[in-house]
Image 1 (cartoon, helix red, strand yellow):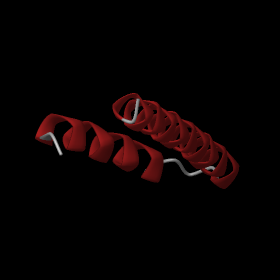
Image 2 (image 1 turned 180 degrees about the horizontal axis):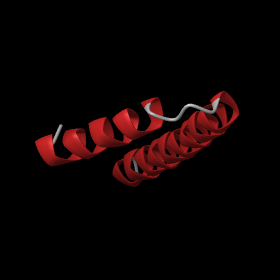
Image 3 (image 1 turned 45 degrees about the horizontal axis):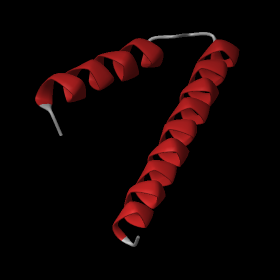
Amino acid sequence: MDNNIKMKIDAIVNEISAINDLNIKHAVLTYMEQQAGFMLWQMEDEKHIDNDSYNV
């Protein structure tokens, strides 16, 4: 993993950890989980399309 990206992710995690309001922290983490899940779904879809292009 690119070190710059890792540092950015770590900074976001540290910022979220500093949130005292548990409702806000939960909302932020839920949103991040949804976004990550969507990105993984898109990536899997792209991989299937890419694999299918080799099978033609």
